[in-house]
Length: 258
Length: 185
Image 1 (cartoon, rainbow over the protein chains, first blue to last red):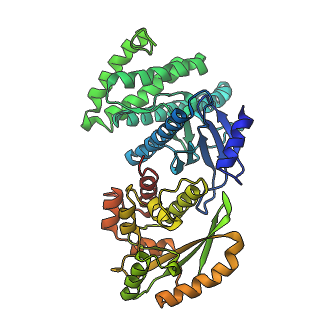
Image 2: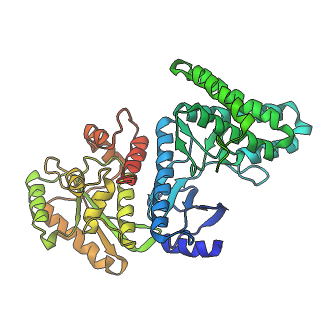
Image 3: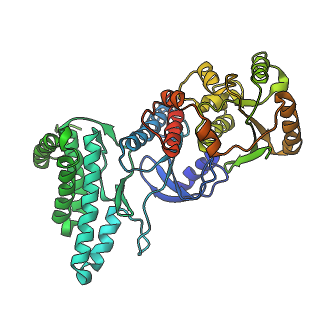
């Protein structure tokens, strides 16, 4: 399957060496050292939405175009709002391509510095190193919580908050993957966003999940009740948290349908 | 410093020739405009005003998008040169793009581009500079980020790209690139 997609991609982006980073149901993520137009060095990420053979070609082209444009626009909005996310390099809405700058580092064990990998990496050493690692873990979680708070204060919802969709670079948290992102001012949607993250942490870091979730929410609270206190952050925080209680009881879906 | 040349890694068979003329008489620019309007085949170049260009990267993004659209046969404009201007513009209107990025006879500098195939590169390059120097009656200079940043029309630029309050060249560039990429989306 991947080979077939790569062959299509080679027609859109010829002459550029690409490495597959990951593949989802909707898109393929690749990395390259080549900038499409400027003489810039560094790593660049290409997100490619291949045509889906099970959809009618016309509808498929429309969906690919609007989703690619939507995601790229969301990233541009984040940059303007000062929320850390990858910078946009180029967009080809008809081809379903987004070029962006790469974020994140490589951990000493060779993995990408996503929150998930970082927590796993630190957990391994935590028995020996003790307190120092504890504070590193706490800081990583709190920074991530703060970025999510910023996102929510700008009435944006990520839609797919998992620990692998957050990357740490030089101690700062970056969000990636805005394929399911949307704009919403509703406390409900933000609470669902947080709930999804809570469940994701529970499944990837089950032993320490309670601790991590506590830190994430603490970071979230500090940002909304601190930096955003003057623009109604406290009120929004308490509304979201109250909704989160409801969501925890009933699950992600509001109705029993779908 | 004469002609600058660049290619894109994706399309090695396409070369872009660029010359920057920092000091051109306004009457010459007016006559260039006239000739372009009357579609004189001798003026088969892309003449760009620097008023709304803040950095080389912004310009490169526009040229890249235009070349890509040509390769994928998705051009909106009739020629690659108009397509370049459209690809620089945040407004989905070709006339508007020509007004913002085309020849501006109130300024005294101009960027000239030519998109050529690799096999015609050698002859085009010679012809390019000779022809332009005679058309514009001026000597080319180097085009750098500093030249663009010092020369662009900040008020018009920020209004066009809706970037009020942004100052640094880097952020203006990123904002302008995003604006141009999202044209019509």
